[in-house]
Amino acid sequence: TAADSTPVDSGPGGTGPDLVLAKTDGGATATAGGLITYALTVANAGNQDTTGVLITDTIPAHAAFDTAASDPGWSCDASSCTLAVGALGAGDPGQSFALGFTVDDPLAAGVVEIFNAATVTDDGSSGPDMNAADNTAADSTPVDSGPGGTGPDLVLAKTDGGATATAGGLITYALTVANAG
Image (tube, rainbow, N blue to C red; front, side, top):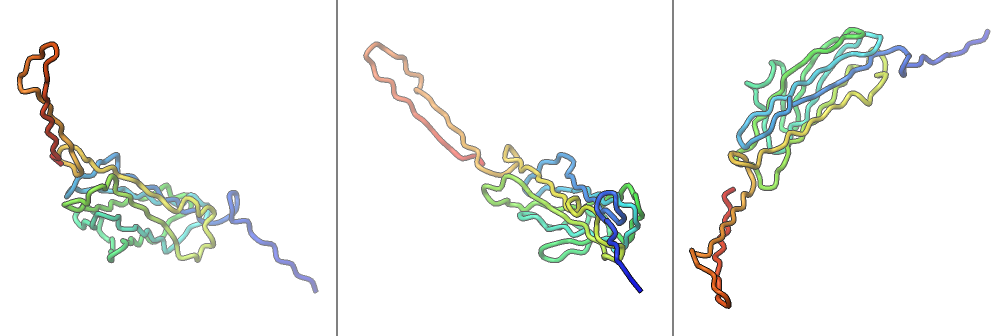
C-alpha cells in the first residue's frame, strides 16, 4: 500500500474564493458637522462560491456612525461597524453598500482629512482566499478648512493711514492680524 497527498494550488490560477473590496467617498470633501457617505463594494473574483462574508469597517477618528446615511444591517460598537453580506457566488461582480459618518462639530484643530478603512472576510469554509491583498480598502476624505470649514484663517491688513511720502520723510504702517477661522 502506498499513499501521497497533492496540495491544491489556491493562488492565482488555482481554486478558491477571491474576495475583493473597494471603497470610495465619491470625491467628497468633509466639513465640521457634515456627512461623508462611503460606497463599499465587495465581489468574489474567485472560481469558488464563498459563505459567511463579513465587511468590517473601522469608525474613523473625528466622526460617528450615521444610521440614516447607511444601508440597513450595519452593526456598530465604539470602534467598528460590521455588515453580514452572506454568500457570494464564484465570479460575483459585486454588491455595493452605503456607510455614512457624521464629522465631529466642532472639529479638532489641525485635522486635514478623515481616513476610513475596511476589510472583508469569509467563514473560511470554502478554503483560503486566493489573493488576500485585495481584501482591504481605504479612502481619505479631505477636510474643507476654507469658509464654512474648520481650521485657522489668518487675515492680514496693512495701511499707511492715507499718508503721502516725502523725500527723507517717515512712513508708518499699521499691520493688523486676525484669525477668522
